[in-house]
Image (tube, rainbow, N blue to C red; front, top):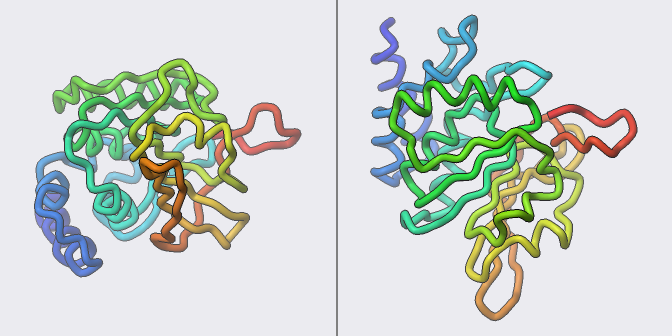
Amino acid sequence: MSLQTEKTNMITQQLRAGDILNKQILSLYDEIPRHEFVPGQFRPFAYSDLQIELPHNQRMMTPLEEATLLQALKLTGTETVLEVGTGSGFLTALLSRLAKKVISIDYFADFTNSAKHPLTQHECNNVELVTGDAFNGWVDKAPYDIIIFSGTLETLTETHRLQTAPGGKIIAFIGKQSAIQAQLHYFDHQGHWSVEVLYETSLPLLIDPFKPNGFVF
Protein backbone atom coordinates (compact mmCIF):
# COMPACT_ATOMS: atom_id res chain seq x y z
CA MET A 1 0.00 0.00 0.00
CA SER A 2 1.42 3.42 -0.96
CA LEU A 3 2.00 6.16 1.60
CA GLN A 4 -0.59 8.29 -0.19
CA THR A 5 -3.18 5.54 0.19
CA GLU A 6 -2.28 5.12 3.85
CA LYS A 7 -2.61 8.88 4.33
CA THR A 8 -6.02 8.90 2.67
CA ASN A 9 -7.15 5.99 4.84
CA MET A 10 -5.92 7.80 7.95
CA ILE A 11 -7.94 10.89 7.10
CA THR A 12 -11.07 8.86 6.34
CA GLN A 13 -10.93 6.04 8.86
CA GLN A 14 -9.27 7.78 11.81
CA LEU A 15 -9.85 11.52 11.61
CA ARG A 16 -13.26 11.81 9.97
CA ALA A 17 -14.50 8.73 11.82
CA GLY A 18 -13.25 10.34 15.03
CA ASP A 19 -15.38 13.47 14.46
CA ILE A 20 -12.63 15.69 13.07
CA LEU A 21 -14.77 17.88 10.84
CA ASN A 22 -12.58 20.99 10.54
CA LYS A 23 -11.71 21.15 6.83
CA GLN A 24 -8.52 23.13 7.38
CA ILE A 25 -7.16 20.55 9.83
CA LEU A 26 -8.10 17.67 7.53
CA SER A 27 -6.39 19.36 4.59
CA LEU A 28 -3.22 19.88 6.63
CA TYR A 29 -2.96 16.16 7.25
CA ASP A 30 -3.06 15.71 3.49
CA GLU A 31 -0.66 18.59 2.80
CA ILE A 32 2.08 17.89 5.37
CA PRO A 33 3.62 14.40 5.02
CA ARG A 34 3.65 12.91 8.51
CA HIS A 35 6.15 10.22 7.54
CA GLU A 36 8.85 12.85 7.02
CA PHE A 37 8.73 13.65 10.74
CA VAL A 38 8.70 10.05 11.98
CA PRO A 39 11.99 8.24 12.86
CA GLY A 40 13.12 6.16 9.88
CA GLN A 41 12.40 2.70 11.23
CA PHE A 42 8.83 3.70 12.12
CA ARG A 43 7.92 5.39 8.83
CA PRO A 44 5.78 2.44 7.71
CA PHE A 45 3.56 3.22 10.72
CA ALA A 46 3.41 7.00 10.21
CA TYR A 47 -0.29 6.93 9.31
CA SER A 48 -1.33 4.20 11.73
CA ASP A 49 -3.59 4.69 14.73
CA LEU A 50 -0.82 4.31 17.29
CA GLN A 51 1.67 6.31 19.31
CA ILE A 52 5.06 6.10 17.61
CA GLU A 53 8.18 5.61 19.69
CA LEU A 54 10.71 8.45 19.79
CA PRO A 55 14.17 8.60 21.38
CA HIS A 56 14.49 9.26 25.13
CA ASN A 57 11.47 7.02 25.88
CA GLN A 58 9.07 9.54 24.35
CA ARG A 59 6.14 8.99 21.97
CA MET A 60 4.21 10.86 19.32
CA MET A 61 0.48 11.18 19.86
CA THR A 62 -1.76 9.31 17.45
CA PRO A 63 -3.06 11.31 14.46
CA LEU A 64 -6.53 11.47 16.04
CA GLU A 65 -5.13 12.66 19.37
CA GLU A 66 -3.23 15.47 17.60
CA ALA A 67 -6.21 16.48 15.47
CA THR A 68 -8.60 16.46 18.43
CA LEU A 69 -6.39 18.94 20.28
CA LEU A 70 -6.14 21.19 17.25
CA GLN A 71 -9.89 21.15 16.63
CA ALA A 72 -10.62 21.92 20.30
CA LEU A 73 -8.29 24.94 20.26
CA LYS A 74 -10.28 26.64 17.46
CA LEU A 75 -7.24 28.59 16.27
CA THR A 76 -7.86 31.70 14.18
CA GLY A 77 -4.35 32.41 12.90
CA THR A 78 -3.71 35.29 15.30
CA GLU A 79 -2.30 33.32 18.24
CA THR A 80 1.17 32.99 19.70
CA VAL A 81 1.62 29.37 20.78
CA LEU A 82 4.06 27.92 23.29
CA GLU A 83 4.63 24.23 22.60
CA VAL A 84 6.44 22.44 25.43
CA GLY A 85 7.93 19.30 23.90
CA THR A 86 8.86 19.55 20.22
CA GLY A 87 9.32 15.80 19.85
CA SER A 88 9.16 14.87 16.16
CA GLY A 89 8.06 18.36 15.14
CA PHE A 90 4.92 17.20 13.32
CA LEU A 91 2.47 18.85 15.70
CA THR A 92 4.71 21.93 15.51
CA ALA A 93 4.24 21.96 11.73
CA LEU A 94 0.46 21.70 12.02
CA LEU A 95 0.40 24.50 14.59
CA SER A 96 2.54 26.71 12.36
CA ARG A 97 -0.17 26.62 9.69
CA LEU A 98 -2.95 27.43 12.16
CA ALA A 99 -1.36 30.09 14.39
CA LYS A 100 0.58 33.33 13.96
CA LYS A 101 3.74 32.16 15.76
CA VAL A 102 4.92 28.97 17.44
CA ILE A 103 7.66 28.86 20.07
CA SER A 104 8.55 25.20 20.46
CA ILE A 105 10.86 24.10 23.26
CA ASP A 106 12.37 20.73 23.96
CA TYR A 107 14.73 19.57 26.67
CA PHE A 108 16.73 17.50 24.19
CA ALA A 109 18.80 19.17 21.48
CA ASP A 110 18.46 16.18 19.14
CA PHE A 111 14.68 16.68 19.00
CA THR A 112 15.10 20.39 18.33
CA ASN A 113 17.76 19.76 15.69
CA SER A 114 15.98 16.92 13.89
CA ALA A 115 12.74 18.91 13.69
CA LYS A 116 14.50 21.85 12.07
CA HIS A 117 14.99 20.23 8.64
CA PRO A 118 11.42 19.10 7.88
CA LEU A 119 10.01 22.31 9.35
CA THR A 120 12.26 24.37 7.08
CA GLN A 121 11.52 22.12 4.11
CA HIS A 122 7.79 22.72 4.53
CA GLU A 123 8.26 26.47 5.01
CA CYS A 124 7.15 26.63 8.62
CA ASN A 125 8.81 30.01 8.87
CA ASN A 126 6.87 31.21 11.91
CA VAL A 127 8.39 28.59 14.22
CA GLU A 128 11.10 29.37 16.76
CA LEU A 129 12.87 26.25 18.05
CA VAL A 130 14.52 26.40 21.46
CA THR A 131 16.43 23.79 23.45
CA GLY A 132 15.75 24.21 27.16
CA ASP A 133 13.80 23.26 30.26
CA ALA A 134 10.19 24.43 29.94
CA PHE A 135 8.65 22.21 32.63
CA ASN A 136 7.35 25.40 34.28
CA GLY A 137 6.59 27.10 31.00
CA TRP A 138 8.77 29.73 29.32
CA VAL A 139 8.46 33.02 31.15
CA ASP A 140 10.80 34.94 28.82
CA LYS A 141 8.14 35.48 26.15
CA ALA A 142 4.95 35.15 28.18
CA PRO A 143 2.04 35.64 28.07
CA TYR A 144 0.88 33.22 25.38
CA ASP A 145 -2.49 32.77 23.71
CA ILE A 146 -2.01 29.00 23.67
CA ILE A 147 0.23 26.71 25.73
CA ILE A 148 0.53 23.02 24.88
CA PHE A 149 2.30 20.61 27.23
CA SER A 150 2.84 17.47 25.17
CA GLY A 151 4.06 15.35 28.08
CA THR A 152 2.14 14.36 31.19
CA LEU A 153 1.95 16.64 34.25
CA GLU A 154 0.67 15.56 37.64
CA THR A 155 -1.06 18.91 37.96
CA LEU A 156 -1.30 22.30 36.28
CA THR A 157 0.31 24.97 38.47
CA GLU A 158 -0.30 28.64 39.05
CA THR A 159 3.06 29.29 37.35
CA HIS A 160 1.69 27.68 34.19
CA ARG A 161 -1.57 29.63 34.37
CA LEU A 162 0.12 32.99 34.91
CA GLN A 163 1.77 32.69 31.48
CA THR A 164 -1.61 32.55 29.72
CA ALA A 165 -3.14 35.69 28.23
CA PRO A 166 -6.80 36.54 28.91
CA GLY A 167 -8.89 34.54 26.47
CA GLY A 168 -6.06 32.01 26.25
CA LYS A 169 -6.05 28.24 26.47
CA ILE A 170 -3.80 25.50 27.83
CA ILE A 171 -3.69 21.94 26.57
CA ALA A 172 -2.30 19.67 29.30
CA PHE A 173 -2.12 15.94 29.89
CA ILE A 174 -2.92 15.52 33.57
CA GLY A 175 -2.70 12.41 35.72
CA LYS A 176 -0.55 9.46 36.68
CA GLN A 177 0.42 6.26 34.85
CA SER A 178 -2.51 4.99 32.78
CA ALA A 179 -5.11 7.42 34.18
CA ILE A 180 -4.21 10.46 32.09
CA GLN A 181 -6.64 13.01 30.68
CA ALA A 182 -6.07 15.39 27.80
CA GLN A 183 -7.56 18.58 29.19
CA LEU A 184 -8.39 21.96 27.65
CA HIS A 185 -8.13 24.80 30.18
CA TYR A 186 -9.69 28.13 29.17
CA PHE A 187 -8.93 31.50 30.78
CA ASP A 188 -11.79 33.90 30.12
CA HIS A 189 -11.63 37.70 30.05
CA GLN A 190 -13.20 37.92 33.50
CA GLY A 191 -10.25 36.06 35.00
CA HIS A 192 -12.01 32.70 35.46
CA TRP A 193 -10.69 29.28 34.48
CA SER A 194 -12.74 26.40 33.11
CA VAL A 195 -11.68 22.92 32.06
CA GLU A 196 -12.90 20.41 29.48
CA VAL A 197 -11.72 16.80 29.27
CA LEU A 198 -11.03 15.90 25.64
CA TYR A 199 -10.03 12.23 25.95
CA GLU A 200 -8.09 9.74 28.02
CA THR A 201 -4.67 8.50 26.94
CA SER A 202 -1.20 7.58 28.16
CA LEU A 203 1.90 9.69 27.52
CA PRO A 204 5.30 9.81 29.23
CA LEU A 205 5.85 12.34 31.98
CA LEU A 206 7.15 15.76 31.05
CA ILE A 207 10.69 16.04 32.31
CA ASP A 208 11.23 17.84 35.60
CA PRO A 209 15.02 18.18 35.92
CA PHE A 210 14.71 19.03 39.61
CA LYS A 211 12.64 15.99 40.56
CA PRO A 212 14.71 13.06 41.86
CA ASN A 213 14.52 10.05 39.53
CA GLY A 214 12.29 12.06 37.23
CA PHE A 215 11.64 11.01 33.69
CA VAL A 216 13.46 12.80 30.90
CA PHE A 217 11.47 14.44 28.17
